[in-house]
Length: 203
Figure 1 (cartoon, rainbow, N blue to C red):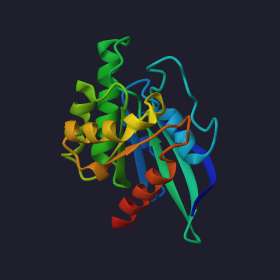
Figure 2 (cartoon, rainbow, N blue to C red; figure 1 turned 90 degrees about the vertical axis):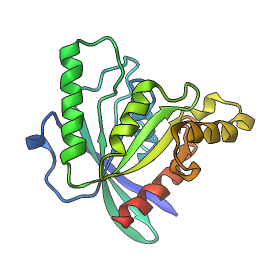
Figure 3 (cartoon, rainbow, N blue to C red; figure 1 turned 90 degrees about the horizontal axis):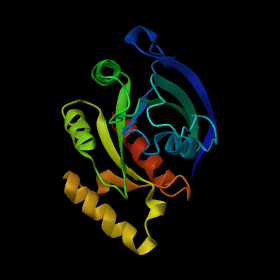
C-alpha cells in the first residue's frame, strides 16, 4: 500500500542555476495549458492546494518544484516533482513562448536527476499536434516516459477502456505505457505512482 506522508513546495526556477541541488530522483510533468496538470499533481500528493489550480491557461511561467515523501512497502522515500509551464497556449507573445520553450528544453536536456517525464494529454480531446511534438522530443531524451490521459471522468465508464486503447494506438505507445486518470474521481492515482516507482527503481 502506497501512502503520501508529506508534500511540500521547494522552489521555483527559470534557469539552471536556480534548480534544487539535492540528489533527489525527479519526475517532471508536461502537458498543454489547461490539461489538468496542477489538479493531477494535487491528486497524486493528496493535497488540495499544493499546486495552485488556475482557470486561466498559461498561468504557470516557471519550473515549480515540490517534494513528496512516500511510504511504500514499509519504506520511506522522497520523490521530487517538477511542474513545467503548459505549452500550446496562444495568448502569449512569441518572445515569451520562445522563452518558455528554451527554459523547458534546458531542463529536460540538462537535468541529471530527472528520471521520468509524465506526458499529459486530455482523454476527451485526444493528442494535439503540440502533444505529438512533445512526445517526439521526449523520445530522443534519456528519461523514461509515462503518458497519462487526464479528465477521464468526462467519458462514460463503458467508453474509457476503448478510448485509452485508441489513444495508445494513435500515439504509437504500448497500452501499458498509457494510464487513464481523473483528479475528480481520484482514478489512476495508485496506478500512476506504481509505474513511477517502478521506473525510478529501474534507474
